[in-house]
Amino acid sequence: MSLTKGSGPFGAAPAGSFNFDPQPPEHVMYVERSPRRVRVVLGGETVADSTDVRLLHPPGRTPTYLFPREHVRTDLFEPSERRRSDPAMGEGTYWSVQAGDRRAVDAAYAFERPPPSAAAVTGLVAFDWDAMDGVFEEDEEVFVHPRDPYTRIDVLRSSRQVRVSIDGTVIAESTRPRMLLESGLPVRYYLPREDVRADLLEPSYTTTRCPYKGVAHYWSLRVGERLEKDLVWTYPEPFHDAEAVRGLLCFVDERVDLEVEQRGGG
Image (tube, rainbow, N blue to C red; front, side):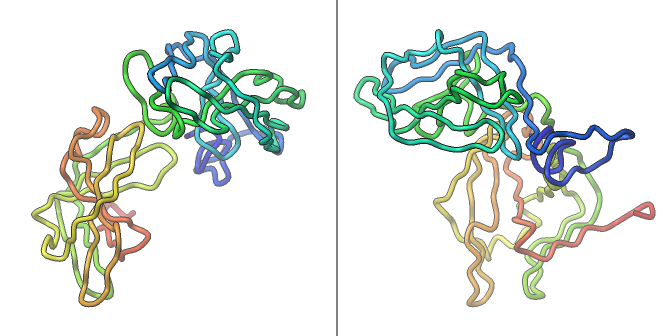
């Protein structure tokens, strides 16, 4: 996530600057071999299994794995009429995948004749992760997209005062937040439950997945007649990188008034 996306060095809004002009092409992409064994499973069958996958960092998007065709069960593929034009990689050819009792429509794709600047992806096969039953790095299932080796998560204890409010109503205030810093993303402040107005929270059935942090569970928040859906989340069983925020609450900063004490002249 930190190379070609967001505030990464080749993203749309780089957080820093080089001391030289790299003169990148209009559509920056980066392809590297991964040391991981990666498997794709559908309908109880292994559709792809390789220790020679490439990790593609496409322009402005999250990474994806590309498989050599000889490591893919192409006998399970059915031709699709779908095509997709990608500004960096050319026209994508799609297949549906039939495995066991499951059929994943337009779930595999490849760029057969990319431009010379994207020759490294020629003929390699990628999958729509949401359409598959599971994708594994070695023997661990990975959600949403591959873990980017250039993304890092740090969680820091802090004594800054953090105040969260909506329309002048304070809904959380803490001097013991934990700051979660994730490459290419804004800083998030996770607060102890005791420092949040729990009486304003209403349970939500919404969950989201993160390949680095795990499964997030949400609450909505009601202030008077105003209901803010899915405004607060927590990781009750986080992955090891986010263990330090287990059970703490975090707000969607963009939808609240967040005040963070600045110290040291910052």
